[in-house]
Image (cartoon, rainbow, N blue to C red):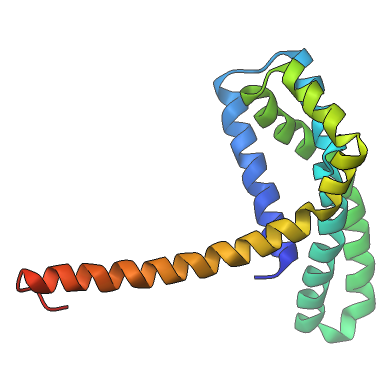
Length: 165
C-alpha cells in the first residue's frame, strides 16, 4: 500500500471518527476553535495538500488506463474535479478538529498548538512522517515475529495436551 493511500485512509478514518464524536456530543466553540488551530499548527491540514495530488495522479492514471485515447480530456476533468474537492478541505479540518476538541480541553489544545509553533515543534512536524513510516515498519516486523512465536508456543502447549496442529 502506497504512502498516499495510507495517508488517505488515515484521513478518511479520522473524518469518520469525527462524525461519530460530533453525533454524540458537540464540543464547545472555544474547544473547536482551539482544535482547528492545532490541526493547522501540527501540519495535519497540510497533509491534505500533499495527499490530494497523489490521489488525483493515481486516479488519473487508472482512468487513462481505461481510456488511453482520451487521456487529455481525463486529465482536464480530473484537474477541475480535484480543484472543486480541494476547496472542501475546511470540512475535513472541522471534522478532525472535533475529534481533538472532544478529547482535549481548549486550554490544553492551545498549549499543544504553542509547542508546534516553537522551533522544536516545527522540527517535530518535519520529521513526524518519516518517524511514522519507520515506526510502522518496525511495528509490522515486530508483530510478525511475535505472531510466529505465539503460534509456535501455542502449538507446543497444545501438543502437550494431545492436540497436534
